[in-house]
Image (cartoon, rainbow, N blue to C red; front, top):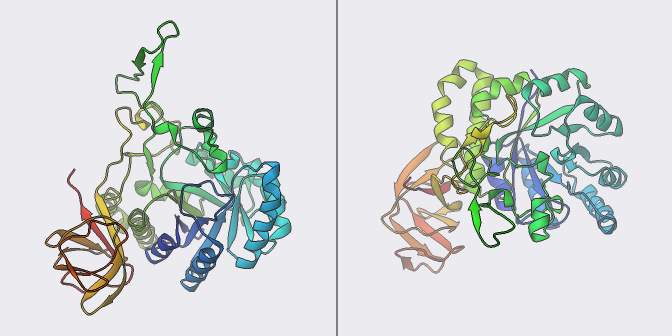
Length: 408
């Protein structure tokens, strides 16, 4: 069996550390430029250096995304950026533009190059092409079936790696090549500024009746005709492994630490259980499904892996997430019986919340007291990003996550 990698997203230094602690073998991040997630917090040079140091200390790799399609005015800055990456020494840089590929080869030669799914990698000759140019890994297009991926594995060099998405949001368009954002708002999806118009509600208008909007229906289910369900392959790990995939990629550089921790922890255990004993994996399936449904999602689909999707892969009546828990914060330290953390959402003394631990435990606790940094007692914490001390009647550790279950 090929060595398997769990690849987890991180949109900030805080989330990178959570991803590492909760089970990632590798994390992928974006710098402040040339990343396809412009709205993510992303990493300054200093944060990137700290993130790479932290990950490497824990035996985890770091890949940096530079997967925009560049224009002429981007090239000088790109050259300088790759020189910076040569100094920072991530484990790989992720690229889709052939021009940026050449600049990366010239200016950060010690860093491996992976080819992004944005490059529309749909056949084995594409993989062989990139391998001959020096790429060590290619990310499959989302439009491939597992049968097609297995056929790619059979036709490429043994040492070439295949990376495929295993969980997260799906794009309505062919590997992200959507023009709606540019057309409606002038924000270029291939420069990282997508406004996600695939999640909007649409109507049609007959040209002789201006202002009269008619709802768009498909199978009488509603009007969100572009709104895809989220990918989830937790039940199909054996098929992913059989296809010859090396790296299982989770989507979500815009997601919270709670989301990243939940998905990383669940897939980590599923992969480890399967490698230990496939029967253990089958036995623990109810736990995986319960945990993976605790984070935000838009219902689940297997995408293109078992053939082309049907109308059942879309959500037609709304564009909202299912939310199982609210993220309250991540413990930074524990002293004098209290956990110190930055509060993300409001909660109050007397509430019942949960402590989520990297080892898979979820501990139900009651909030006994809340104090601000000056030691003043508080009944609740309504202001986001306050630094607080909380007594939950139990010992806490760094990277424990506090969350509150929400009524469905």
